Length: 433
Ligand SMILES: Nc1nc2c(ncn2[C@@H]2O[C@H](COP(=O)(O)OP(=O)(O)OP(=O)(O)O)[C@@H](O)[C@H]2O)c(=O)[nH]1
Ligand SMILES: [Mg+2]
Image (cartoon, rainbow, N blue to C red; front, side, top):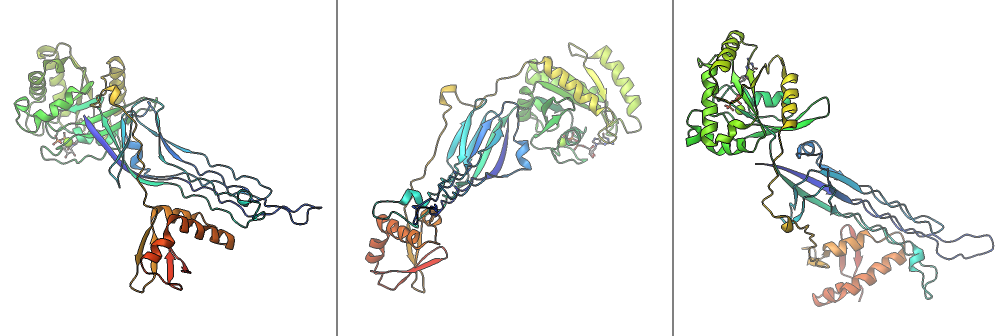
């Protein structure tokens, strides 16, 4: 089983700002407050799409942002809420918060959703701040910022098709021309040390996951070469593409190679020989390949130890000859082969969706060398971002909110005096007893 992993960033939309406005009606000289609320910002929601098999799509799209809510308007009109952004993920995706290490959720069922970044609440317009004491408030809130997170998505993937064969027969090269995977390719043996995965997409809309496995050699089933740990992977693939180098360049007999690999597969697990196999006769662009292929075909019919004579498809990764036919026949074979259950290592009842809410410290206070008091902390900063600094009354409201949070007490306790400079972000004000 392979683990596909990607890191993504999600930024939810901020809420729309609330508005400060007043009614202007013909026969009402001093109309009441009429500023509407901002709309809710869009959230980012992961949703399982059973049509997806890998996290490959995320390789090119790593930052997801949803839209901000619309600002509140005059005449008490609310801003429109922004649409949520749905991001499709395959079944079996596990979501981690990279910064806290928490598991946010396991997405195991088609259609299952997980909010990974909540959109900000819309700020309230001045209508909401009216009271008998203050019937015409110049107070409005800005929208709440949207949540932002760095996530790691993880998926255990089963390859549908495994490329099996001696070292250097061109397994990785095939994977590189049939999929967008970029495996290492070189003329020396054992270039591939761990399997690479790619998604093969056919013009007719079918697709399958293909893996190039490290080269097998005689004795692989007993642990010679890299063999054994990867034979385990072969066990999990539904169709085997057995790659046989027809060039004879390395002085080996293609048919002997083919039989040796099959023997290793059988020694590891006799059932592997029942797995549907297609022979990809590779490097057909090289001079002796055609001749070697004819001999191979004859021997295959006469001598093979396999129950059924597999199909042979002569291909070249260089000229791309017959590659379409190889993928089409592989897809046909896959359709006839039953699927394995994906093991996630968990029983159904263990599959919980975790939600994680860190305990927030309301504010932090430190003193700079130039004796400025610097306020910070997630909750306080959020309140500050939601304060509309254009209206004195809004600023006063923020001052009251800080007092309620205990900021004044803390300043006093730490020895702040009237006239000391206090800073939040880029905003400074004087501490007044
Ligand atoms: N002429 C020719 N050369 C090829 C073709 N396919 C692969 N090669 C060459 O064969 C060599 C080995 O290719 P790889 O794809 O790395 O072989 P591999 O089977 O993945 O090898 P290991 O990972 O070591 O098991 C490289 O030098 C490739 O350029 C082909 O169709 N035609
Ligand atoms: Mg390779």
